[in-house]
Length: 193
Image 1 (cartoon, rainbow, N blue to C red):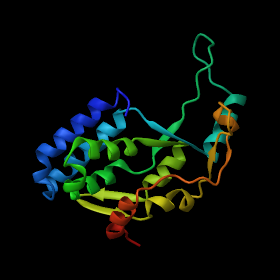
Image 2 (tube, one colour):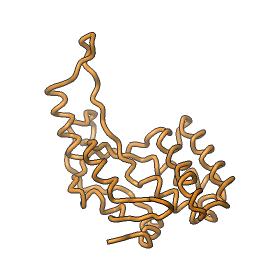
Image 3 (spheres, rainbow, N blue to C red):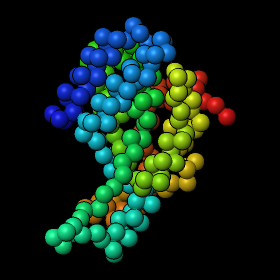
Image 4 (tube, helix red, strand yellow):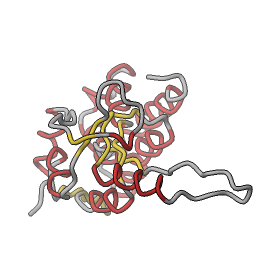
């Protein structure tokens, strides 16, 4: 974990450990999961190396028609990043299994860092995938398992070829994102049709 992310991880760990005895109380569920999510969101993104085909196309389109600031300087492309493991739901797993994830900072830090992993997407793609999970009033629903979200949304993953630094030159890949088995197993109890 990088130095910038460490305080966010430690703050999330301390806050959740202090208040984990309130897990299950409907008025505490959201604040507890948000403690994890908000700190993941503000820590440094861990880029997976994946970019969606839609984002590659958006970068190419931007290069053809860039935006400029008032001084005439080209503005950089603003990508959208999807935390592909749905950190707020990962927090549900963490809080439901404190003996595994809250027993020591090292175990917590591993899942925290993995939760900060991102894929570059477009805003519409990110919005489409957010609809696959729902958490309201302490009720958690998974409409599509994590490892099926991109396929179900019709999103194709790409990666840059070896030695290529420009994201707009990424190509479709058969490589897959990493999904922890324990998360996929935990999700099963929340899947709704």
